Structures are given as structure tokens and as C-alpha cells.
View (tube, rainbow, N blue to C red):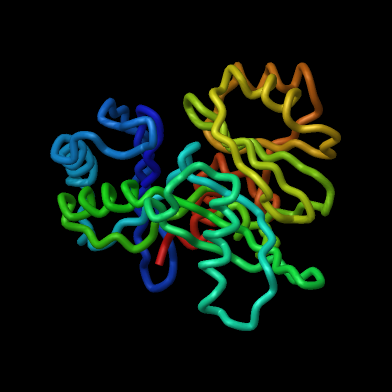
Length: 265
């Protein structure tokens, strides 16, 4: 389930002896979503979702969520090299506090090692507001489903690159994850997602021209938005993203996509 501005993308997956089957894929219009993609009326949204899945004769037990917005922070930082694992999170918090005016205790902090450079450790840090996680837990409880995953778009994208499901070179590249009203602009260098920005669709071209210089390739995927795509084609050379050369707009391609990014268990 992906919760976006004014929309819920609902995908119901059946795992039948290891074979994934999509039983439902639908976009639901929903006004009860805040600017950071939390649900403002749990009871109403829960009823909406239950109505959609009520006709599928399957025993539902688990739910996974996918989310991205500007409140979720992705930063690559360097900290002092240390042999003590218990010191790493403290060093990360100290480094972030130097230039970010936020209370880090209000966030879930995840990180991954990118490498060691002399006396420094390169780390990718993801901060997600705890209020988002708690809100989705409440929705899961209302749906009587067990939450098993809360994924972030750019983190899933990094997984696809790491698994070489997406073939991309070491140059500076852009991947546009196009939604109904916004586009997640992912900036990738040396096969690492170095930053990700949620931009309104009518501001995407201006954002790229203003903030990103000397990129080599630009790709797009996600919800079809002919107006945005046509405007980009008129200004720059862009290509539609494919996974294993399978176009994800078709049923089999979507099945392969979900099976590889780990949204299904």
C-alpha cells in the first residue's frame, strides 16, 4: 500500500507456494491524507480499504507500506572511523545536529555503510518521522492486519540498483518516480542514491534545471502523466525505465517488480 497526496495505491498480492499473483491493483481517491502522508481519519480510510478487498476470497494477514515525501530525510555523511559499533549512532546524531535544525529523537534513524575513506566512514542516513510509523500501525490495527514493512521509495530504488535489477552507470543520473501530483526526483551517482526530492509535477523541469548540473542520463517510471512526460521530452533526452528489460506498465512486469524489491514476503 502506497499512501500519497490524495491517493492510496492498493496492491493485493497472493503468495502461492512462492509464486506471486496480483489479485488487485487499484488507485483509491482519498482526502483524509495529511501533507506528510499520514491518515487523518483512520476509521474512514480503513472502511474504504476493507470495502475494496472484501470481494477477494483470501485470508488477509499482513500489510506493507510504501511512502515518500519531503519529511523523510536522506543524507550521505562522514563520521569519524570507530571500531565500536555502539558509538556509530551517537556520531551520526552529532554530525546531523551540526547543520540540521530538527529534533532527531522525533525520527526513526536508519543507516547503511558506503565505505571507509582514510579516517572517515561514509554513511547513508535515512530519517523518518516517528509519527508516520505510528500512524500506519494504527491503520494496520484497524484493518486487523500485521504491519511487516514500511519502505521508502528511494531506499527501494537503491535495493534495485544493488541487485542490478536496474542497470545504471557510475555517472550522475536522474530517476523520476512520477506520481499523480508529485514526482520523486532521485539523484544517483556512483550507483548510490545521494539525494531524493518530492517535487510538484509542474515544477519538475525548473527543479532539474536549477538544482542539477551535468547529469548524463534521465529516466522516468511510475504513474502515467502524459503532460509532464511530453514537456520533459521537449526539453531533454529522457528514457522510460525498465527492469530486466520488462516494461513495468504491464501485469507480468509489475509482478516481477514487486517480487524483486521485497515488498512481498
